[in-house]
Each structure stands twice: as structure tokens, then as C-alpha cells.
Length: 167
Image (cartoon, rainbow, N blue to C red; front, side):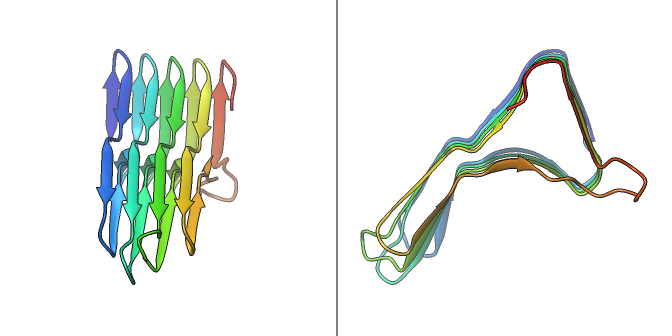
């Protein structure tokens, strides 16, 4: 899959709320492909997770997700002349109304089942967002990163080149 843009690209999650048991509030932003992904962007690429709130009711569980992710089932060949910013959103989960458990996840990731070759003309930033919980049996996770991918034993599976800062 090829994406060719002469300017900036921005993808932002909205706002999601789940107030009943067994539901997920998902306000995520992503670019996904089952095959090799080759975006060429002559500007900045910004993915930002939204805001997700989940409150489990008596005896149930709830999950809030506000992630930002680029994922491909093949190789990722990312060419950006500007900055890359992948930022998790805000996820809040609560068991204060008697729920059994609640989970909040606010992550940022670049993942590929194949090789990742990332070339950035500016800064490269992948940052987890804000995840919080209230009440017992509640878990919050805010992580960020990239995986090494898979390739032949003789090949590089993760190559990141940036003309700016990496954080």
C-alpha cells in the first residue's frame, strides 16, 4: 500500500465513553495495512490518540483505549521530509460504581511484521499518553515504542534515520 502526500498528514482520535459493563471505549488513531506500507509524506506525520473513558458497572469490567499506531502486516518503508509525532491519548478507567475490573491503555507504537526502514527529515517522537484509573482492580498502562520486526537472519529488521532529534 502506498500513500503519497505533498503536505502534512494528521490523524487524531475523538472521544469515546463506555458506561456499561463489558464494553470498550476506544478513541484511537492509526494507519494500518495487511501488506507492505510505503508512505511518502512531504511534510509532517502526526498521529494522536483521543480521549477514552470507561466506567464498569456492578460486577462487570470496562476498558478504555486511546492509542496511536502505525501497523503493517508486511514491511514498513516510512519516508517523511518533516517531523514524525506518534502520541498516545488520554485513557481513564474506573471501578468506583461497583465494577469488577477496569483497564486504561494509552500507548503509541510503530509495528510491522516485516522489516522497518524509517527515514525522517526532522524530529522523530513516539510518546505514550496518559492512562489513569480509579477504584480497586484497575490497571493503567501508557507505553510507547517500536518492535524490531522480522526479516532474514542476514538483514537489518529495524533501521531509523533522522536528521533531527529522536525521543
